[in-house]
Image (cartoon, rainbow, N blue to C red; front, side):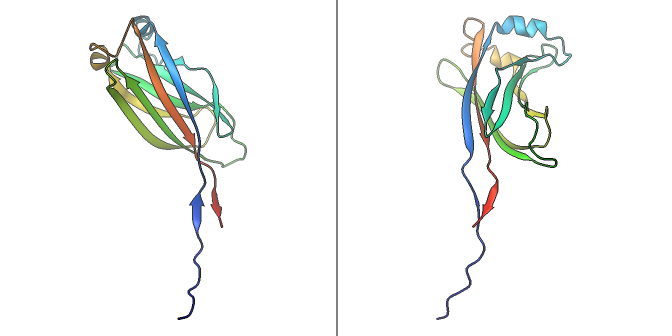
Length: 151
């Protein structure tokens, strides 16, 4: 039997991943400070995959939902470059129950922001267990995909 031709193979290398904890202290106050004008609270800057990022929390007291987004703070290294990202965010209550959202995005410019605009309804978030002493913690994971390599 003649050997068959070896096809070209493509592989996605491992992703650079980082998990951050974003403590929201003073939930009631943050909600009162938000007037529906798009005000947000931003995490400290962190680096994953060679790019700087931050998580933003929008309390939006006028709307029904709390929003959680990821924003690219770095300039891209090359014109036309894109960065593939997996973004996951969870909110845990004292019983270990949680909301968990995960999505994949492609960022193509500095300042671009994507995420979960309907992360949690205020009435569900304010139910017993999620907010303790007027605080809660968002657990977010950011994975930046590496470039496709041909071998």
